[in-house]
Every structure is written in C-alpha cells, then in structure tokens.
Image (cartoon, rainbow, N blue to C red):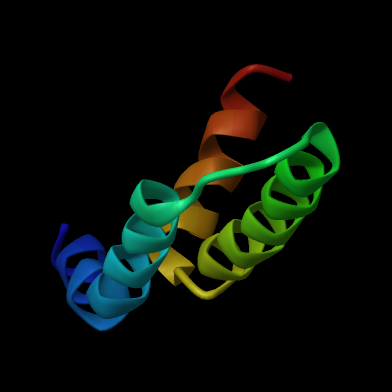
Length: 66
C-alpha cells in the first residue's frame, strides 16, 4: 500500500495535467478526436509502465485469472 501511495504522489502532477487536457479539450471534427484519444492513450500507457506497484498488481491479477 505504501508503494501505491508513493506512486500517486510521484505521478500526481502528471495525472492532473492529463485531466486538465481532457477538461479543456474541444473538437471540430472526428479526426481531432481520434488524434487526441491516440495521444491520451500513449500518455496513459506511460503512466502504467511508470508505476511499479500497478505493474505488480496487474501481473498478480493476470496470474489469478489464467
């Protein structure tokens, strides 16, 4: 649990910046939406790979349901 707390504290500003981007987003056409979602997906994948406690949890979860 301490590792999760440390991850949240470490990545908190990054998560907040992504949330601000989502809140501020507005789109004119579908191509803009697709580009934004692709960008956001890439950013979120960085977040997951940067959190050791999440990776440990995800591995245990996957093993549980094999």
